Image 1 (cartoon, rainbow, N blue to C red):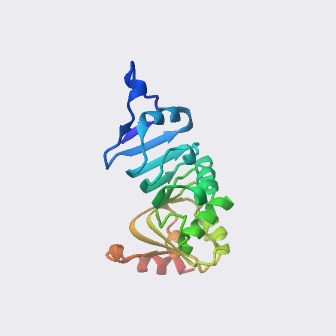
Image 2 (cartoon, helix red, strand yellow):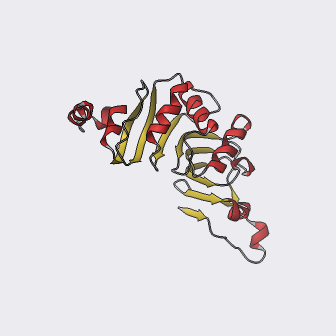
Image 3 (tube, rainbow, N blue to C red):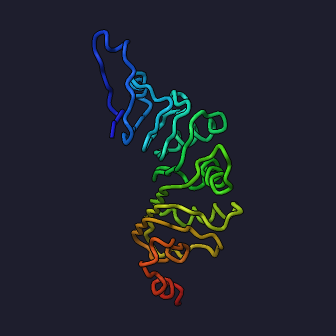
Length: 213
């Protein structure tokens, strides 16, 4: 992982002569305050395993013909920048991940999820990771009722939902294919389906118990 959260310096003539090519497998973390360090790298026509962005406009990066396997949007500023520039971008995002600092009521957040599931050509193809902390799980389900798709597919889901909230009745389900972490309220499992890779986890008994008065 190459962390551009901290400044990166080069000295002498090398500062102006070289643009470094990143080897495959490197993960980048970029935030607004240190984004000037990107000038040291040539990121065009390359493949980035994971690009995490915080409060930075990804459209300002030189990413022509670049393939990003996972784009991790850390906060709402990064989400807004990506959403607004997505249609004119010159790079391809295979999977997108949403961090815990996002507001589940954010219209652009919900629209991006909708575009992924509709197969919009300029949108990422899949959702890799969805984090719902601060008791936002049932709020998220309520907001996604406006999306026509009744099943939201993610590879990884992390939920922290405390208290005894039972949530509102909804047909929306989150289908998890690879990894799931639930902390707190077990009733969250009533709105979750597991993919084939997680079939060894039997949640039927817990779901039945949660439905009991």
